[in-house]
Picture (cartoon, rainbow, N blue to C red):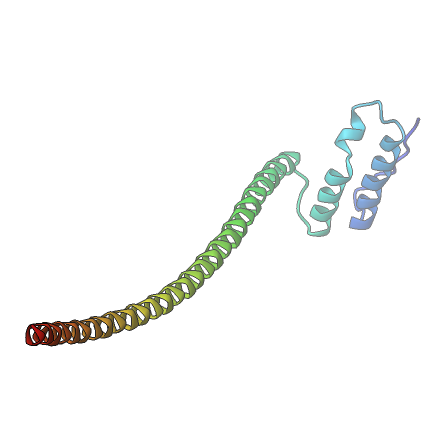
Length: 161
């Protein structure tokens, strides 16, 4: 494969970028060599942008920028993971708060039911206590009646004799 490139001292930016594109396209046709990796689309894009912005092409800057881009990508990935963890924690917190709220509501309902039951039992105890008092009073009255009857019976039995 042969590459023909015409270089001139006063080439414009578009011509220089076209040469880079031609090199990339040519080397893509022979992928088993090392040069296609040098003229990758990432490198050619970087170089084209530098030419458009009137900056010189220093491959070491590309390497440093590539290193920085990798660091930025890694930090972005870590930040994204941290944000996802925060979202998960926030969701878990909301779930726990909802469960706590539900448990508190259930406790309040149970407590209200318990107080109602307690009140009903207290009323029943009071009713039963009053019944017991009434029964005792009736019993005391009956005992007095029995005593009076026994006295009368004794009197009657002693009179007849």
